[in-house]
Image (cartoon, rainbow, N blue to C red; front, top):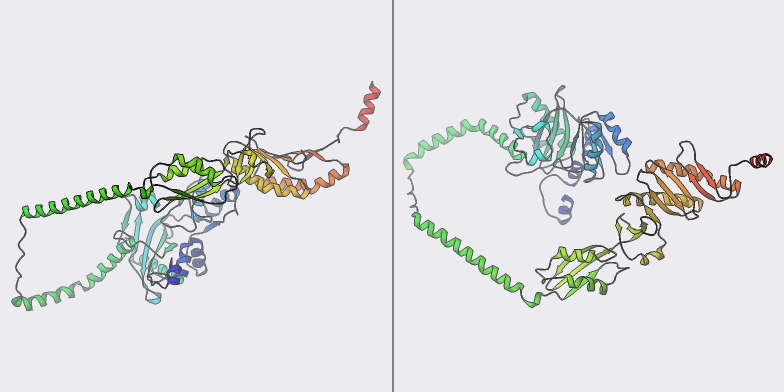
Length: 513
């Protein structure tokens, strides 16, 4: 927002682009604080795609329990989870991952939670009184921040005067380090044992409503200042009043309106508003019934391969009811999305009598299900039904697995298919069993048991298999018939026309006969 305002030449208050962008990124804030020697809780950063279940479950070993898991770039404690046991790590990470690709896991500091606003710029900036936050069960999350009436905000904070001064000085250092200006608010945790304050984050655009924390602290600051000046102001007012009392005349009081006149005026205003609303409603109803607003055209956009505008209109038009104002856009959208090959439809009104529809078709990536009864899977891993004859020319692979697992199987196919190109093979079928085992079938009919495990484990087995398959098959001059990669220290293969039975066994059998 600050960058957009600067590009448009619009003045604004508060911190600039650099300070705001660093402060909203909690990890970047921590790195700056640590570089400047300012205390902040230990942390572990999980970047998208760079961690698995093993890395997640190991975080409590590094940070201890309890710990905090939250999105790296969010505010208002949205997506924040306090993890008290190792088993809760996966759910906490999944919750934060919905809001940000990068996840911050942070050491939990047990003790007082406080916040301290700052006003001003550079060396002239000053810290306002510290506010101590007392939340139910010590959990100051989104619910307790905005919807719970039992959360307490204590100002004065009740901390020793020297301790409050240390926190104010620490917050001022962080404020100046990030080059904040105007106003901001820093959140701090105080270790209950060592009384060491730890910076959590800085909010460069804190709330400024009547019940927000910055105005609350500002009010306390003004109260302190007024107490110092109160005596002098009262003396000045007292002497001024005594010196001019004999010259002052009391103005006459206005005559109040009688009660019946007040009621009549109120009734007249209310009646006028009701009549105006009725006239307006009638005018709108009359206008909406005019033929000018009857739907006359549907304009469609989108890259349509398997559908055409004529067919779509023929399927959808009979289901439309109403005019430009009354047509049900949600029902219209559902009608379009019920047409085969249509994945998504966005319907908008175009004044005065048209609809604009932006369509997205399914892009078939594979077949889904058992042979002979397969449906189609699109590029999002969604299973859909359509005329498979339209997709037969595309030579699609066949995927299969338990219900709801199409996205996972498609992801596995996209990871594993390129690996078989090294042996000039095409992955034609990939199946996930109900017990979690993977099986592949190549274009030459070879069946490969891939076994259980993560994608990394399966890829490791395939690399080991591919690295030596050519050497083994060349030795016997035979093609692969099947392979079993489920062994921990190797794999088993079967080549077409090759048996492990010793030729001497046949001679022994003949001799016995």
